[in-house]
Length: 114
Image 1 (cartoon, helix red, strand yellow):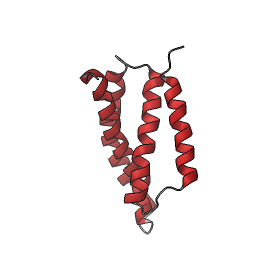
Image 2 (cartoon, rainbow, N blue to C red):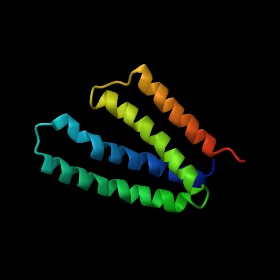
Image 3 (cartoon, rainbow, N blue to C red):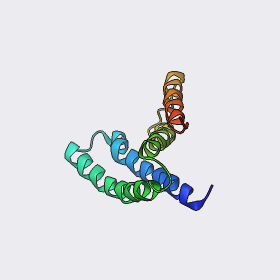
Image 4 (tube, one colour):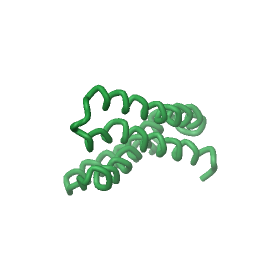
């Protein structure tokens, strides 16, 4: 796999780590004021966008938009699974894994040539 094909994947991975913290990190601090959670999440999301936008811009040179979106969804699920178990202390159950596997199959279908 060439660097031009790998770089968008690495950027998507990084952006999804920030995204997951922005969207779900505050759940560990439920006593914090909601406004603080919103502003903190917004600040974290800025870093997500600084990786996501180049990932999609540069990735579109080697992947189609649907392929980029499919990759992003699978990466999101992988990052979230680790985050949920490690950070939130909520490991996924069999039905979560099964649902995520079906989404991964859907993303794989996107890469099949008609």
